Every structure is written in C-alpha cells, then in structure tokens.
Amino acid sequence: MSELAQRVSRRFLLRSGLVAAGGLAAAGTLAACGSSEPASDASTSSTTTTTPVRNGDEALQRLMAGNRRFVEGVPTHQGRDSVRRAAEAESQAPFAIILGCADSRVTPEVLFDEGIGDLFLVRVAGNTAEDPILLGSVEYSAEALGSVLLMVLGHENCGAVKAAVSRVQDGTTQPGHIDSFVDPIIPAVEAVIDTPADQLVDAAIRKNVQLQAQELAASEPLLAPLVSEGKLKVVGAEYHLQTGVVEILG
Image 1 (cartoon, rainbow, N blue to C red):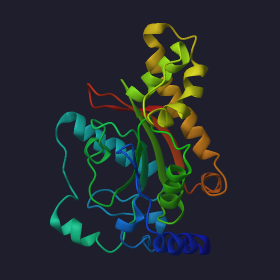
Image 2 (image 1 turned 45 degrees about the horizontal axis):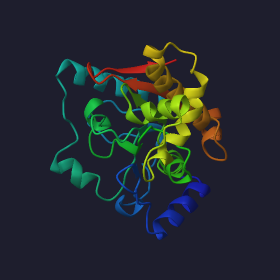
Image 3 (image 1 turned 135 degrees about the horizontal axis):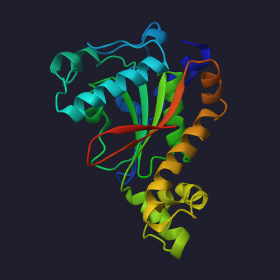
Image 4 (image 1 turned 90 degrees about the vertical axis):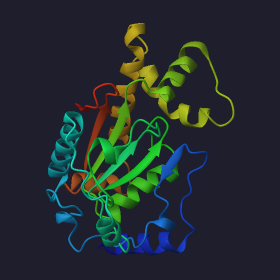
C-alpha cells in the first residue's frame, strides 16, 4: 500500500465514519467496513471463488459475465454464505467500485452476480458524485482498497433524472432536500435539451452517466493519476429495468 493510502486509511478509521442521510446516499460507512487494508497485491485483487482480476479490463469482463448469468436466470449466488462472511470480516479488497443510483430496483451485487466483499458500492439518487462525501468514498476504494474498476451505473426510468428534466423545462422544484440530488443532474439535461420529447429522459440519463464518468476520470488529486497510470478504469453504463441487461455506454 502506498504511504498516501496508509495515511488515508488511518485517518478514515480514526473518524466516526461517513453516514448516509435520508436513505439517499449509501456511501462507504467506514466505521462498519472492518480493516481498510487491501490485498497484499492490489493488481491481482480477488475476493471470490470465480475469476480473479488483475486490471480494469478483466474486472469489467467479470462484471459483464455476471450480468449475463443474471439475465439468463442462472446466477451462481457465489460469495454470499457464512464462509464468505467470516472470510471478509477482518479486511476487504473490492475489485470494483459501483457509483449507482439508490433506486431499490438497481442492486449491483444481484445484477452482477457478485458476493460479500466483491463490490464497493456508492449509491445516491441520480448516481452522481458531486458531493465531497460521495467523491471521497469513491477515492477511498480506489486509493486505499486497490479497486481497479469504477463504473458509473445509471438506469432507465430514473426518477432523479425526470425531476431534473422537469426543473429545466418547467422550473419545478422538489420539497425538502430532494433538490440536492437533482441539482448535479441539471448540466446533463441542458446538454441534451433539444432531444425529441419522447427521448429526452433517456438521453439525459445516458448523458448524466457519461458526464459523471468523465469528471471522475479527470478528478484530482487521487483518481486522475490512477487512471493515467492504468491502475483504474472508469466506465459508464445503463441498467435496463425490463430486461436486466447492463449496457456499457461508449
């Protein structure tokens, strides 16, 4: 582990942990994460009985293979038993980070057929990382835990994106603190506002994913160097609720 990663881990573990509020952001509650020590060699990170991964490309292949099993109705459900629970109790080395929506229908471990300790999940309505707490959670898994893949995972029929579209088109605001997760999506809607009305929401969903992936890949001071050194791969994807298929966005 790098000196910076050791400092990050020690500092984070001494704090009380990051607590998601209102069920909108589930962002790596470190107080419940056990040791932050990654596997001895992050380049060969593996916490599963299936294919180990050495880099972001292999990590993506593994996720997509799991999604195919899920879609075909033949998931292995590997890594979800008492043996895995005990094995992961003292440390973690998730091979991939999923920045996903908090939507109850989009559950990464299920749709990628992964188990305990395989994925580091950062979930917030609208799958954005504008808030420093969310960005810090992503950075923590990439820098301190050695995750080699970061996937921004949007999904069709996203309510957060629909709210952003209503804001741009009609000036509609949301009650309470709901607009706090709508605000970061506005640039994506504005970028595709000339799209035909019946295609606008899906275009905004995809643009939001793409913009978030681009921003994260260029994020300083931690993520951009990992990307440029080939230690972290960043991709965007959209989950289709009806079919269960995860589509990688170019």
